[in-house]
Image (tube, rainbow, N blue to C red; front, side, top):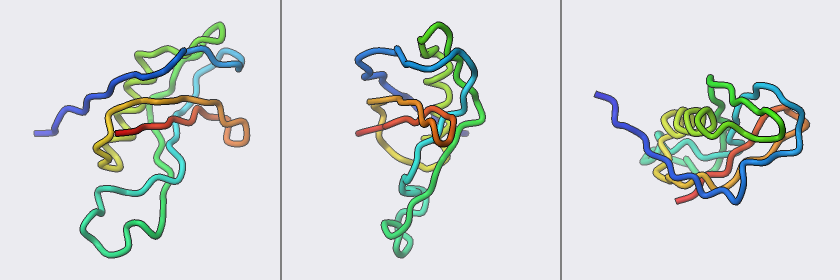
Length: 102
């Protein structure tokens, strides 16, 4: 049975300065914590992305889809942190970038 992933939203605001649309969420340069215990997990990093797209309408990020996408990322990389501390638009990759802390 898969363990439920919980996340706490610690954002100052869900307002972003981007046009309305649906965006994938990426956590760039994160350690793959599922490889913990194996040699050299801290020497390389990976990008983890959600399959769920986050809705942005009228400059507001939809928190329900943002939480779902962030949970997907935590399930992928095994990080124990549960605090969604930030979300920004990455114009180079045309996606939302999340910052998750413990």
